Length: 392
Image 1 (cartoon, rainbow, N blue to C red):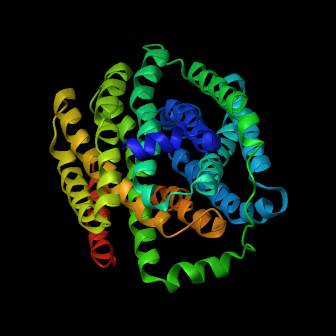
Image 2: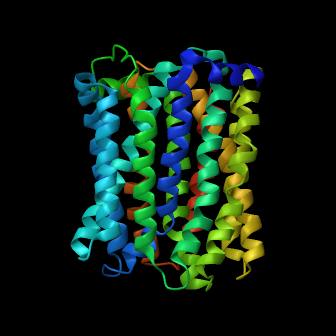
Image 3: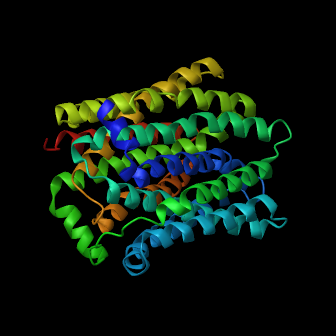
């Protein structure tokens, strides 16, 4: 751990350190609106349209990931970062100040696309400035822990801002201000970034490269399932807790914040363990099993904030371990030049938001809302097979 702190404090690693600062701020801006998006959009569109909008936004994100590597090779990552941040500011402004539903929906779709490209750009900065592969797990652990700390405090902040009067728009204005702050703090440092020689982007070649190596295919699969789990929890848990169980928004914010604490507790030790042992598979399998089993138990819970906090906490213990093992394994096998592979790895998020709304919309035609947790639990447990097949 002391070696990692020394790396981050070294003057020549200013870009690396700024990635951690910008990562926290951008995670905070995203987390503030993450759990209110579905409720806000549901309040202004026809019933059933929310899932369709999530799918459309995810398709836009996916297209963005497919074309960005080509743009990256032409203009560089510094301009990609500024363009994505500017697009996100416009999107949040439309959602915060838009008076017409069409403006709010337009902002929502733009937000889903641009907010996915910001972490991708940070990955390029991070991998391009990371010259200590033996510390990948520890550095990734700290990076994810800082980001997840933002996710822990954000629901409480959002719950307070929304309050009993459901002032959703105020949250988007605060979120937009945080993006401004992230650009202001990081612009001068990121200007000094030396662009690596990016590989010529070819989506289908990238796919062939991904699936040619069975281990990369397997880690992509476990990451896709993890993102699908996040999508279900993000879209449906606030709705289920508020509309079905009758929880207040302040109570929901507190429950979700406590449930996300495992991402702070377990990811740095998990990354350091993976560095020390050179092994991610065992903990990855354990995380998936814990996450899947506890998710399957959620429909059995009564309307008790304490019980929901405990069980959501346990699902996130599994998810936090799964996430750091996924990230460590993948980034130990890539570097800053592998923009195409990193882009494909990050498409798991928009892909999940295409697949999950379609799948759950079909399920909800025949089953009650709690059935989405059965879908999530089964998907997670199915991912144990590819995880077991990983080579150390």
